[in-house]
Image 1: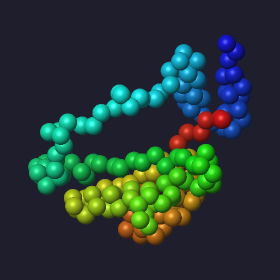
Image 2: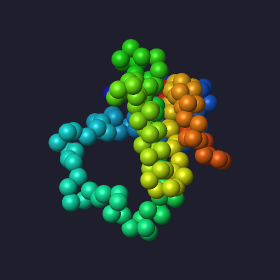
Image 3: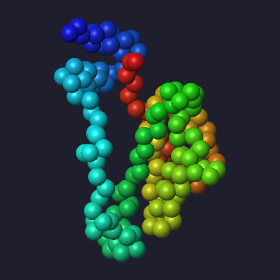
Image 4: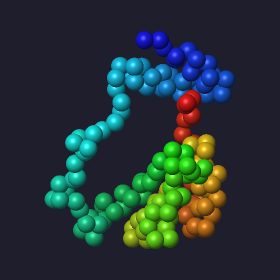
Length: 159
């Protein structure tokens, strides 16, 4: 089987991607050639045991205080071009008037409210989703925390 890796590496180098990103891509490329997909089937996924689900109100103070170390990181890297979209999929309407980004933000604000801790939200964007998502988040003035960004960019691989 012919390897197209040298062409991909050249494309990534021309785009200014760092060596670690190129190395990571190469590893994944060889895994695909070996037949690995990185996907889980439905049969491999199961819900948690009911007895392992803990109600927040029953947590000890020690566990609640550890929320000071929590950061909520959400992948926000999909454009939804396969659905005919030119914006982040998280901006799609999901429930009532809320989109997925609204739901994510409200979950984080709820954690902050219940725990009285400044739990940060970090969105991992692709270069395509960053601008429209950050513009949308401007309506949540209480979301940003001092000295912390709201986002970072994921690595960019060639198509």
